[in-house]
Length: 463
Image (cartoon, rainbow, N blue to C red; front, side, top):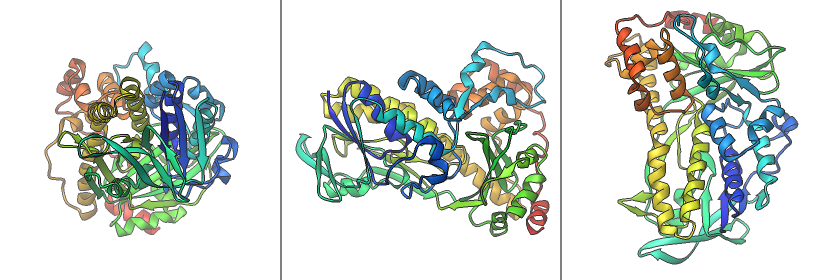
């Protein structure tokens, strides 16, 4: 058994704490924000200043459910009991698919989802009920504490120091403090080699509005739909709620008019497969968010860890623009990786950090790379549509798969596996049935236009 400190009581930090405690470790979770709320009051009364995107849309995909059912038994039922919605993505297949036959394996893609405050409240209750987990809120980690090195020239972390000077010893410190992680400052404070960092603002701005109604909207298009110079993200929520997000480029001046609820509604109303998502009662203004940093960190440099006794998971390790909503799902995969590595290497700090890096690169990094590439392509498309230019890039295998997914069931299921973090893109593209579906439709036209072109969009925004 080990004493472990987890920095950050978000969904991923709490989930990791629960997994590690189930293996017999003593886990202390430190969170700078104040007290949690019960799920029933989380949306209305819980404030999380440390999480800028706390009230922005979040989603739990099928991979989240798969990992939760394996590693956190009962959590899926607890989410459902708190009002989180069951979603069946297979049922939302395009009407243009004519070769669909139900399969028993389709059930694997069903999942529960809800708004971030509600989901986090449920996860918090689940984690805090675990023997061995102590959650201390209102405690900020100031710096790392070190002891005798395990490897020559590599600092070894033996705990943390809080803002009020308290030292908390630990055999492992897990950074789960999210997008605003101060890991680089912490590591600099112990004279560690700087981690590899790739960072930049992809340049998206999000406009989100929440709705409620007696019946959630029937899905007639993919949850994330690209329409010229903007995209639409529609997500189911808990307790008869849902969200609609319009997002585009942060330097698209005209799109800023979408902050006006009337303009927002006009644009959605002009999208034939999304307009019915307005058929409810708005329960929020249009919430804007921009300046979301893409960042990837690697804590092993040239085969040597920057420190032992320290690892980072979830958004504290890598984060992308939340355009696809996969952060919580990939973060839970990362927590599962941590549990597996700690089980095997708890008594060998050097081997633990090296194995964590290797397993992260194999099992989690591909999700980040794929999303970053998709975001780069989408930025190019949006800028071209905004400026009235054609997109000058060759059609990729993913482009072909997306077209085939509108017409063939095997391609559609392959896309769902990618979207739901059930498989990496190369795995899906290598499936014989997917290859055949793409080949059969290689000359098929793209799906029909799903919303206004640029001129129509500007007219709608202007009213």
